[in-house]
Length: 278
Ligand SMILES: NC(=O)c1ccc[n+]([C@@H]2O[C@H](COP(=O)([O-])OP(=O)(O)OC[C@H]3O[C@@H](n4cnc5c(N)ncnc54)[C@H](OP(=O)(O)O)[C@@H]3O)[C@@H](O)[C@H]2O)c1
Image (cartoon, rainbow, N blue to C red; front, side):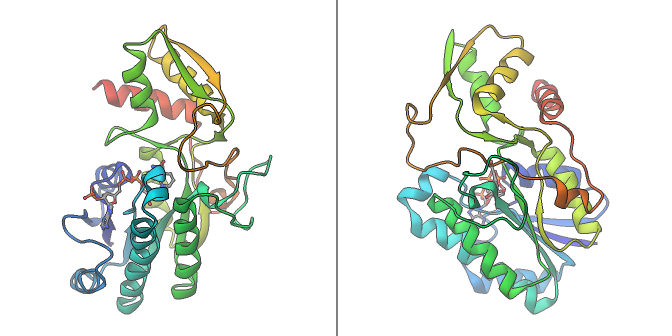
């Protein structure tokens, strides 16, 4: 299978490049192509003529999106549309990475794929609008919503906590946002299976189980054998430019329908810490 991967230099892109061994994968970063440049996207996709395009490229700075909506919508929505048009032109399948932030976080049980989108941030809106446009352009595309990514290929929450915990006796971490941490290695493996299974439609793909950022930080510090005290605080106290959903746990049912189960986040965290120590 021939695959073109946009966003190959990102956290998920690096894991996908490592995990995707038996197919022919061409990985592209923003240095190879800016997905806002429709002509360049079109030329590359025509040259490569892949069976699958995986679109993991995005402007992922959630707070940065609030102050630069033009960039957020330019890359996350319009860039995605450029890739979808190119995919349609050459008859490639498209798998697009989306986010739990398309939801408002007001539910108290896990979000199903058919639940209404109601994003509260610019980043969430840019992803939600991309989803709608892609489904219009390419009704058989696969939209994979995921959440709280961590891995060794870049900045992520466990890495930040470990670096801070190394020099601090206490750390304040928000305890009123609940979601599912997701190890990019497990997500990459799920994405590869989804492509091999010719998947279409919206799929929720996260590690199993959920926690708050506070609980996640506690588990990180405990696993690393550190003594730092993690203290629970409210989002209000740690105010940030972009609002985050209070609850964004995604139901695994859509993944299970493809016969895919992802490991528990605690198990994923242990494997991440082992990988990080190597
Ligand atoms: N991180 C999370 O917690 C999270 C949660 C839910 C969903 N997601 C989604 O999952 C996907 C992967 O996220 P990630 O954390 O791996 O992202 P990331 O580490 O921020 O990487 C982003 C990738 O996109 C590329 N990129 C950025 N702007 C581009 C542009 N204009 N044209 C072409 N490429 C561009 C970057 O290339 P350069 O390195 O060259 O800049 C990089 O390869 C994204 O769609 C993201 O929205 C992430």
